[in-house]
Length: 270
Image (cartoon, rainbow, N blue to C red; front, side):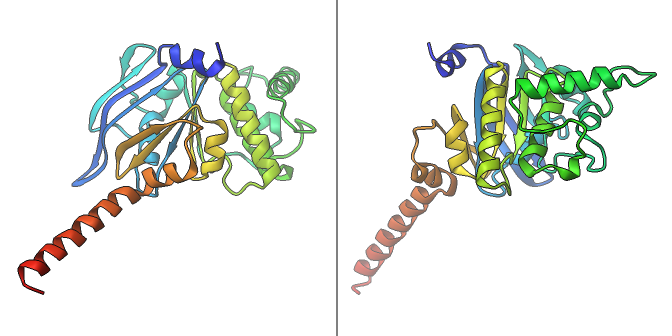
């Protein structure tokens, strides 16, 4: 059985049902369902304003849903804050990465989670850093390099590795390949596959359809704050674009309007 088939047969780590989020009179999300299984990459795609960032912030504990339920490992949970999400095992790497450029790789990996609370275990942290980066086949020459000297792809690798130190079961990546070159993008996509192979559930948010189709087992399209289809990597680029933009809906609306205009013209004898 392939890894993707095994993932599809497994019980979800995370299950959302009927998640809605309102900001005053504005509805950002309406009745969202989502499952994420171990060893699976799920992509969230959609136009700006589709609700992707709002959904991620709910899962990161930043926002509270207005309605709906969140189940984690089969138990209903309330993600009351970012600390609670991390405690449960839901890690998020936001697009800004939140790295300290003046510190080296080791310091960034362990910032706030040093191995010894009273005296820094520099040797232990360096060994753990090298071990984790080797597991991820990371292309970082030295863990003592300052972050400022690293490429965009290497920085993304450090941010992902830092989240893995907390041993999460779900990791969310917000636009992980944004502004990266071809080689750096390939490096990050390979890293995502290695994270999936560790048995984690991975959620990626991206506007790049080719990157999504390269690594995602399932692609969830959000449109105007609602679920608008579940697709696989075999889905064509055009099918995804149609689901994201609602081009088919717009085409139907235009045809209906055209028929209506024709009927009015006939009735008017024009």
